[in-house]
Image (tube, rainbow, N blue to C red; front, side, top):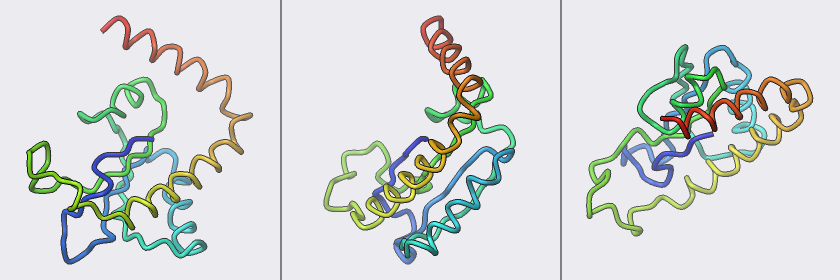
Length: 135
């Protein structure tokens, strides 16, 4: 899971908006969020973006290159990105709380599946560690 600027609003008229990238081969990731928003009344309006090859420039790219599925919560940038004007009073705390809840619920579901995925992911995580050391 990757969290990128989850507390800021890119669209002031849509304070619940964020982009939800996930590995397209794992459609359940999108389904889980849709259900959790409804079941837990999360105040979120995600732009669902299933991605066939999620290897962009963010932190999840290295994992995706190794075939490890990703979930990426992103507010789709904002005018103060990496600038001095990116100050705490501009944070949408309610959005952070609900994205955190949503990601907890996704992790909970992933944990339930860990027995199925355990061997494959453990190998890939070790490969990722060595990839990061060597590059």
